[in-house]
Structure formats: C-alpha cells, structure tokens
Picture 1 (cartoon, rainbow over the protein chains, first blue to last red):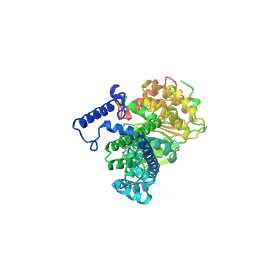
Picture 2: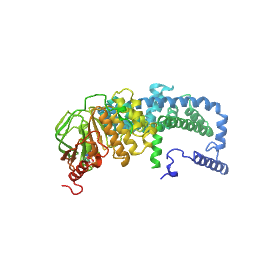
Picture 3: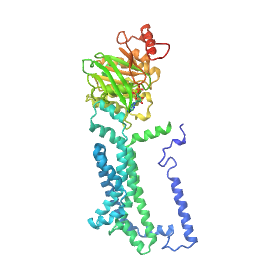
Picture 4: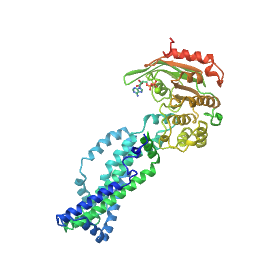
Amino acid sequence: MPSKAAAPRGRAGRGGYLPALGLVVAAVVAWQAAVVVRSVPAWLLPSPARIASSLVADRALFAANAGTTAVESIAGFALSLVVAGLLAAAIRFSRTLERVLWPLLVASQTVPVPAIAPLLVLWMGYGIAPKIVVVALICFFPLTVNAVDGLRAADPQLLDALRTLGADRRRLFWQVEVPGALPAAFTGIKTAAAYAVVGAVLGEWLGGVRGLGVVMLQAKAQLLTARVFASLVWLSAIGVAMFGLAALAERLALPWYHTAVRERNWR
Amino acid sequence: MPDASAIRPSTDPAPGPALRCRGVRLGLAGRPILDGIDLDAASGAFVAILGPSGCGKSTLLRVLAGLQPADAGDIAPPPRVGAAALMPQADCLLPWLRLVDNVALGPGLARRPGALALAAEGLRQVGLADFARSYPAALSGGMRQRAALLRTVLGGPRLLLLDEPFGALDSLTRLDLQDWLERLWLGGGRPSVVLVTHDVGEAVRLADAVVVLSPRPARVVAAVAVPGPRPRPAHFRTSPTATALQADLLGALGVGGGA
Ligand SMILES: Nc1ncnc2c1ncn2[C@@H]1O[C@H](COP(=O)(O)OP(=O)(O)O)[C@@H](O)[C@H]1O
Ligand SMILES: [Mg+2]
C-alpha cells in the first residue's frame, strides 16, 4: 500500500536528522544540569560547556592533529579497500582459493588488533605506516566479507541466460557479478569508513607524536578531561564525514538500487 | 503493428538447424525429471512444448541450451552453451541497466553492430519506447518480459529457446506479441524456435508442431503437426482446424473431456 511506510528505512527519511538532533540536545542539557547541580569536578566529568570551550580554545591544536588522524584513516581505508577487492575477486574466481582463504579470513578476526599493534610499531617504527596498517586491519573484515557475499549473490539463472547469449567469464564478472555485488559491498564500505578512525586512534595510542589519539593521551595525563572529550568530538566528526562520503558515493554509484528499493516499498 | 523486418533476428539467410532428441533422460537431486524425451524439429521450424506445471519443460530447455548435461540420450546438434539463445522463465534483466541497455546486451554479446539502435527500434515495436530509459524495477512483469524477449532475439541466434515468454502479459498484448514474434521469425532468416507455453491457443497459433509432455517425469504423450499457411491468417485462431487441434491438445494434457 502506498503510504508513509514507503519511506526507505535505514536512512534519514523525510523527517531528516531532526529526531537525532533533538535527542543529542536533550542529552547535552541533562548532562550540563547534572554536572552543575551535583558539582562534579571537571577533571572527572567536564560539563558540555567546558568541552565546548576546549574546542574553541584548543582549536589550533586540534586542527594540527586532526589532519594526521584523517590521513591515516583514509589511507588505511583505501589500502584495505584495494586488498579486500582483490581478495574477494580471487575467492570468487577460484574454489581452491576460497577454501584456503575464507577460513583464514574468519580466523584472522579472532586475533585482537590491539595485540598486534605493538608488533607493528616494533617493525615499522613510530611514523604513519603502522597506523595505516592498523586502520587497514580494522576495515579489512567488513569490506571483504560484504564484497564476497555480494559476489556470491549473483543470480545463477541470470548468469546462465547471458552465457547462452555469448557472455564469457570475464564479461559475466564485470557486467553482472561486480555491479550486483555493489549494494552489499557498500554496506561494508560504510561500516569500514565509520570504523577507520578507531583504528587510527588505536595506532596512535601505541606510540606516535601526532594525531588526535596522541592529543587524547597527553590531555588525560594532565587531567585535562574536557580536552579528551573535545578530541572525541573531533574523532566522531571525522568518522561521520567519512561515513557520509561513503553514503554519497553509494547513492551516485547505485541510482538503480534506490529505484529498486523504492519500488519494493511501494508494492 | 510495426514492420518486424527492421530488426530481423538473424542476418544469416540459411534457416536454423534441425533439432533431434532421442531418449533424453535427466534426474536432479535424485528425482527423475526427464524420462526419455524424443523431439524433432525441422530446420527453421517453430516447435511448441506444452505440459503441466513442474513437469520439466524449463529443465528440458536448459538441457537444449547446453546449461545442463543430460544423463542419457542423444541430441543433435549436440548442445553447446552459446549455440542457442535462452530466454528463461524469470525475465533475468540486470537491475542496474536501463531497459534499452538491457536489451542492447543481447545484440552486443552477439557482436552485432548497432546494438543500441537495434534495441531502441525493438523497444518501439513492442510498445516500450517510452520506457527505454527506465530501470527494470520500475516496470510491470509483462513489460520486463517483452524486454527480455527482445534481448534474446536481437542477438540473431540460430536456435531460440523461449520459456513461457508471454506468461506475464495481459491477453490482448499477448495476442499482439504472438503476431509480432511470428513476423520477426519469418522475416529474420527463420531461426529454429522451441517455445514452452501453458497456453494451448498460443501453441497452435505459433507453432508448426506441438509436443505435449506428461506430468513429471516428463515423457512425450502427443506430438501433432499444425498445418496452415505462414504467416497465419487473421482468422486462423478461430478456424475449425485450430479449434479441433486445441481440443486434441487439451485432451492430451488430460483437461476437458479428451483421452
Ligand atoms: N536444480 C534442480 N534441482 C533439483 N530439482 C530441480 C531443479 N530444477 C528443477 N527441479 C525440479 O524439476 C521439476 C521440473 O521443473 P521445471 O523444469 O522448472 O518444470 P516446468 O518448467 O515444467 O514447470 C520440478 O519438480 C522441480 O522441482
Ligand atoms: Mg518452467
């Protein structure tokens, strides 16, 4: 039935981001009130007002370090995307590779990245390289699993029909399997884009001289708790921006998909 | 109806190959599906296959297309993927391509020049010119079927395997498209056609020969020739010959007072 239920789920519908914004405002007001009323010390839990003033006062510090974290996040994400794409294609093309790589891929997720990260620092030093690798490791699993699932989802009847019309393996891959895998792949891409900053901060915590993670550690050591929270605000801003770019890329790459979803909802 | 010869399915003047099946058997998942199928189609002939739902008609087409090897039996010429164009029962359009690009895929894969122009002209002929730039998801099942049929015929195959191509169409459009398909076939170098249908009238209207299959596992229970000129005259559907044949075929299917 064509009704309000037709608004696609999972995205901000026609109501926009107003409900989410309202919730944040309410939480901030409650937080401010609680801190003031119970006079919580600022080093323990700073009020939103203090965090805001840190954002303003320390803006040069944040601007100088946010760039490093953003570059690490984007570079690690990009590296992971390339490797995940190649791996997913390899798994799709070869049953043997699938049998060898798929269990390893799943097993690799049981190794905690924070446990490997110190080794990366040991091997690669305190520069940007180990941070990029940590980000890539964090992004790798959602990217690969979703890409492989997407490639596996190709309709065998459709592949067969095009084979009878003269399509060879390569054309089927590029014209059917890859475009068909994109909706699932973008689920992984959006997930990984939002996670990437977590990897960057993790890398910076293990040793580094620049980045929001370093700012956080130093602020914590000096009990500048408002600055720790302000760093978190910056981190989420970077994460949300990366997610937003991924979602935008999805909309541009899949005009047909949104038609299909809209149609399904209207039936 | 527009001139079907503008998009002739084949540029090869020789008619399609004669088809001969003897004792074709197939089991799937431990169950017999095809139980010794014998089938003959003369060069360039139009053969219709009738049979109850689930009897194995689609499976037989997959075997003829070379997608599914038979367990036993002889088929000449031996099925080879790419030698016969299959239009599957589900329309199988690519959701990310606009309708005209979906249709152009057929002639494109067959390396026919001017694939896009052929697709656009084809869409015009089947009444879909206004939807050339739409995505398949925005169209009705009948519209998608017409596009899938075009995609299959425009590659110019020598052997055409059509699995209930008009199943989702309303009855008026269906009659129109039957006429169109006959003209396309006659004007386009006469590929051999195997058409699966549920519709006895459609089988008699289009085919030179009609084969009736039993419920699964499928065996041939009747094979009748349909006499008459080509193209079939307008009154052919309601002619005594056609109505008598339809009654016979319904009988062979076990419907309506026949044998
Ligand atoms: N891949 C398969 N594996 C197992 N059984 C199948 C497979 N494909 C079709 N069948 C079975 O074969 C029978 C015939 O199917 P089908 O050829 O689609 O029938 P029809 O087209 O005549 O309706 C059905 O009972 C179906 O369940
Ligand atoms: Mg069928």
